[in-house]
Amino acid sequence: MDSLVSYDLADGVATLTMDDGKVNAISPAMVTALNAALDRAEADGAPVVLAGRPGVFSAGFDLKTLTGEDAAAADQLALSGFALISRLVAFPAPVVAACSGHAIALGALILAACDYRLGATGDYKLVMNETAIGIPLPVPAIELLRQRLHPSVLHRAVVLAETFSPADAVAGGWLDRVVDAGGLVAAARGHARGLAGLNFAAYRITKQRTWKSTVDTFAAYLEGSRTRRGILRPITE
Image (cartoon, rainbow, N blue to C red):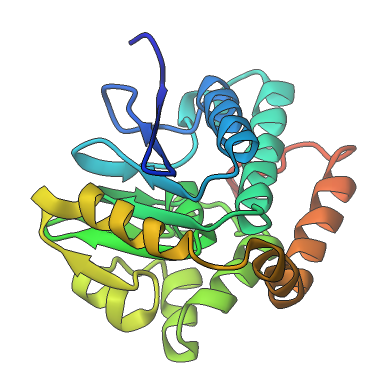
């Protein structure tokens, strides 16, 4: 494909669509493309719709890189992925997610980092599967989900790696609402246009105050992990 993330600015809303032709794995190239698209949206001063391809929002980190023989490349991908999450949490304009399908691991965290989260109807899953595949979930990821998920759901999602349907995700706080799949992006764009009426200066200050502890947790994790090795490597014991 020519671009992993397309950019469309219309009616004052920037729509970023991830599409690698497969499962929208978060690879080094995808991270670069997402950051470039966010740069454009920030320069345009536009609220953002972040969408996936039909049937999948994102299946999370590219496991070929994350579990490959090049440990330095795996660590760099992990750090860049968490930096992307931190950027979304602190983004200076509203970000509306259009979850078109499966949101797994880092894909589910990207979803949680958005201001408002619309999901499509359909048979797909939202899941943090790290404990199922032997990866202890980093503290900032847990703190992000603590902000989003209802207390009774957090343990099931984070520790027990429970799989959620779209309806269960709404009940648990992972999604705000579900709409017909055919109208998902239009609904997300309409919601983003409504958020464009906010006073962005007040929005930024209030968002910073609301998410300060989470953003600080990400910053400390990213700084402390720069000299660590095997950041997200599976436990083999």
